[in-house]
Amino acid sequence: MIYYCKNCKQVVKPKRYIGFGTVLMIIVTGFMWLLFIPFYRKRCPICYDGGFIVFKNSGVYEEWVRVEKQRELNRTPEWIRNIIIKRDK
Ligand SMILES: [Zn+2]
Image 1: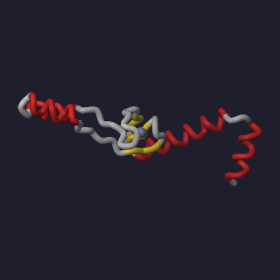
Image 2: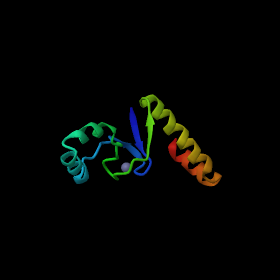
Image 3: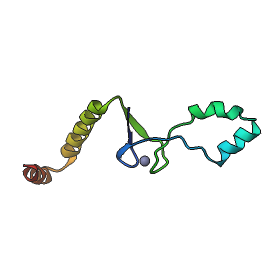
Image 4: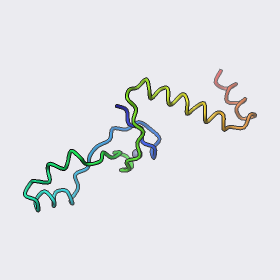
């Protein structure tokens, strides 16, 4: 699985965060809370946000990047596009 953070605009390794609230709940519930940790939402390690686009594999991701780039290029006015295309060659 590939996680792309919409906020950071890059591929990240999401993590679950065990904060003070979680530790408190574990103590209060007599460790019963540990059962809920696997259901915690994974978050981006850079921005702590969870807005991900999830890709099955790197092939799907690369295809998406290609489509996004094309879409970006289509939004660009023609005279700028010409400069970019010339520079790419
Ligand atoms: Zn992020």
